[in-house]
Amino acid sequence: MYNYAADEARYTPDAMCRKWAIKYPDEAGDIDDSYCELLILSGDGSYSWTPPPEWAAETGRWWVTRHWPDNLVLTFQPEHKPAQGHFVVPIRYKKDGPVHLNWQRTRGDAVLFDDRIWRADPLASDYS
Image (cartoon, rainbow, N blue to C red; front, side):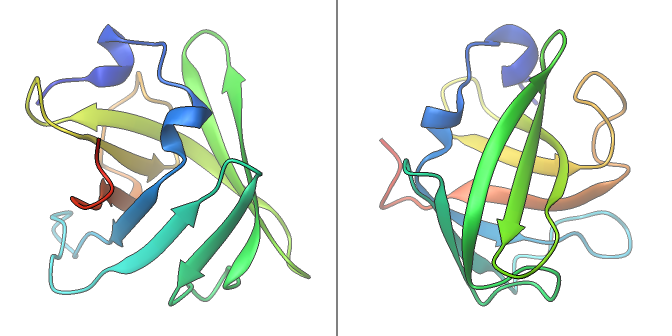
């Protein structure tokens, strides 16, 4: 596994603007590929999520804040619901492969994946 965040800390919110396949871990912590949701992060700060998780809404606002030194927090603000933010950890599983985003409760320099909420995989048709 290639830790993109540690090696290339210039990963920015602009790079997150794309279509993502959201996948969830099973009880063992492995990603379950049998189910995914479509999350579109737009450059204007809006998102759409189909189908949305129960805590979110189909549309809302998103933003990223940097916590010193290199930890990013990705926050979603669904319409008429409270905002929810957790650390986002960009990972490349292969050195020249696409970036995957892990949304988790601990910082990126902590143990990865023990508390992963979901993993976002870039859609192949949207990856450039």
